[in-house]
Length: 382
Ligand SMILES: *Cc1c(COP(=O)(O)O)cnc(C)c1O
Image 1 (cartoon, helix red, strand yellow):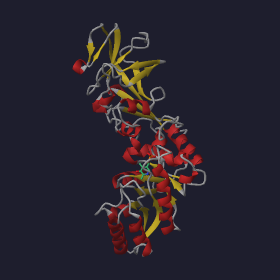
Image 2 (cartoon, helix red, strand yellow):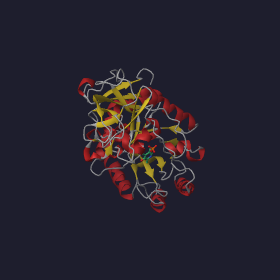
Image 3 (tube, helix red, strand yellow):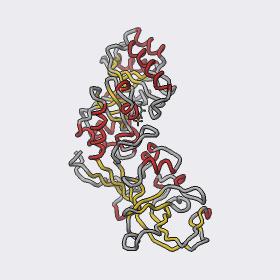
């Protein structure tokens, strides 16, 4: 459906401080890998947060072409955007039913994930008003204590064979510690989920996020719901990340300068240089969502960039629109005004940059800026 590689909603490359390349073929191949891992379970895709920052419309278009027919968003607003692109998809809204928006869910064929008795009541009331059976997912809490009904609340629903007009299509719960496969809460959640399934024996069940897919068949049930792994992020601690990177960020070099020993770089004079150092200044900063916490200071190295086989440590703080990097080892013919330094991608893994900023790949990706030029590649391979 989207044939142009460029995003008109973002600036053109010659006007932007950095360019973000989204590899839709990698997205599609990550989905296929997870689908194959899930074996007989159906593989959906979680595309909340604007497709984890890479662009909802483009992401779902590519995933649909790869064979994915079921999607999870967080908000009705996201579901309505998705519906414009994919009239035939099954779309669940994880944050549930928003009061007053019932008719909009119906019109856009959004299936709310009902996580409290009040939501079940509202959906049921709407079903009676429109004299139609309305599909829903039932969210049972198994230990996360975020959204979802208690087992007792779910039992009350199941006991009356669901309030009139609500047709359960899926039973879900969510893992709190999927990223740590040995955490005892995983086993507890599995057991509680089995109890919930007994209440809704006919309804397909779904428990696994990305980590759950990779943690083995016990977690797969009828449908899996990976998010971060589709976008190349790591989802399990302490093991190698098998997913292909999807987003590559390259920053424009504005100038290259020499800094003498004893001098400092950037705000707060946070980092002192001890040898003659060549510094490249790039046009990206925290106003781009490039987290300030990724900056560097004496004794506390920050993130790094990459160019042509060279790793380029940040020097000093991340400013609003600028970052300085140590490029002493890079020859002039490569490092000059107008060169592009990779700040995220194959050579600078998402989870390493995020880790340098004290956060996780999820947050880093969903912060990706509207100021970057965007290019979507791999369209024909997706
Ligand atoms: C975000 C989310 C997912 C996807 O989680 P990942 O860790 O990104 O795979 C699945 N289910 C629910 C309920 C979620 O909120």
